[in-house]
Image 1 (spheres, each protein chain N blue to C red):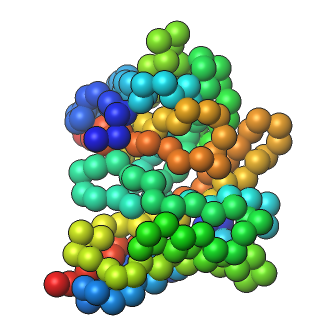
Image 2: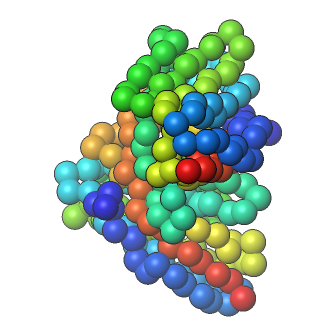
Length: 115
Length: 114
């Protein structure tokens, strides 16, 4: 059972335009969401996060939107740059009791930004 | 450079064998997390240690175990290896123990089982 889904395996965008990466989840107990970026042969790098009590968080060119009723979040990159080409992972965190947390990742979306 | 060091970068071994993967967290980080990334499963959380104690468990098999030492480095032990254990194993660290904070990942150890 995949609790965090990134339904688009890949996305191609022109430089300077907006990139929108989507993520859906099924577990209503998730209370924190994070986006990571991964280049080949490197580990994931944290990008931006959002708490379930918010619906938007912005950091420079990156904005994450959360729609709790739809169990959907999206990452907007504006403007997109060729260096943004990477695999983007959505992750969701759940406190499963006391100090126990779980972190569930989506399978990732490969973003290609064309010059 | 995330500051998280994983060794070795590559490991090739045979079925039935046992291997140990090592992780040095970022300076000052108390929490270490282990993940497995295989082609069909994506990134799977295995286990977390915080300041030497096990904090959270994910999809970790009984054949796998981990520990965190007093100097905060961690080792992931994989035994009775099977072909399906071939994957990229990542270690990550964070200052505190919650998952609701950014983790800093190493570049991974690629394990190939022949």
